[in-house]
Length: 273
Ligand SMILES: Nc1ncnc2c1ncn2[C@@H]1O[C@H](COP(=O)(O)OP(=O)(O)OP(=O)(O)O)[C@@H](O)[C@H]1O
Ligand SMILES: [Mg+2]
Image 1 (cartoon, rainbow, N blue to C red):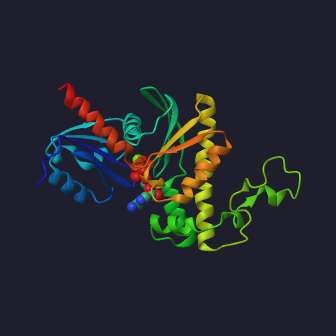
Image 2 (tube, rainbow, N blue to C red):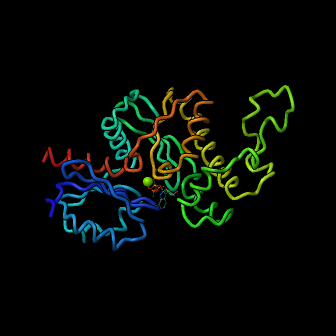
Image 3 (cartoon, rainbow, N blue to C red):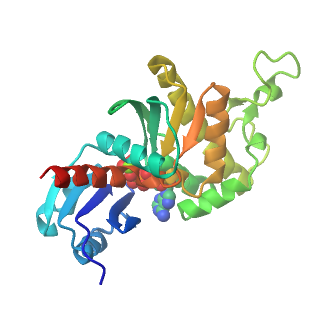
């Protein structure tokens, strides 16, 4: 049996619970947040000495029953620490001042400046919207099904584009969206799924653009499970952020920013104890 990790980082999100620990290298796992018994069993099997928790569901797990010292860390502090650690591990150099986006069930936008992180805004449009509206619109039974449909869809036949409104002399580029879902020339499931990803992605990017202008940032770092294996959303975000003059950086293991940040915070505590 592998040795018990000294510290376990836990991020209990609205949809998914993420776990991070070191056993030689960094290990990450995710579990549906509703499977509390499975999560407790996994933690018991790992038997860490110290657990650091973050995320909205941290109180639900029942800290006292976990058989280890348990601390909490704020979600935004965890995210900024975790993103910095993952960026370093992935060889990604970031400007000291940048936006950090948690593309989770909902979306939060943080302004990171050196060591400090402040939540500057967000939107209820997020991964939960993709799953919920995906079920209603195209009967997608899962996130994976919706993401796969979107990857082969063409939203230009669902969204009304500026070029559809202006046959010539458009005041803004003709390929931009004039109105999401307003054309509906196609109701093919793949096209609708792609349009749904477009609606969510464009609006996340536009929220970022406003905050970036106020904060004087030109780089947006994105994480969260909504981006994992979801190439259509990554493309919409990259394009839309690019149109607003921002450069997008995606962390390969960005779904685990919160859990890795909790782990790093715990390792600091262990180091100073
Ligand atoms: N296996 C999966 N099961 C469910 N959702 C998934 C899965 N993989 C990716 N997703 C997407 O990821 C989203 C959740 O992302 P993430 O884990 O970052 O959020 P969270 O931490 O649970 O939520 P929040 O931070 O808003 O509390 C889901 O809404 C869904 O769109
Ligand atoms: Mg989260």
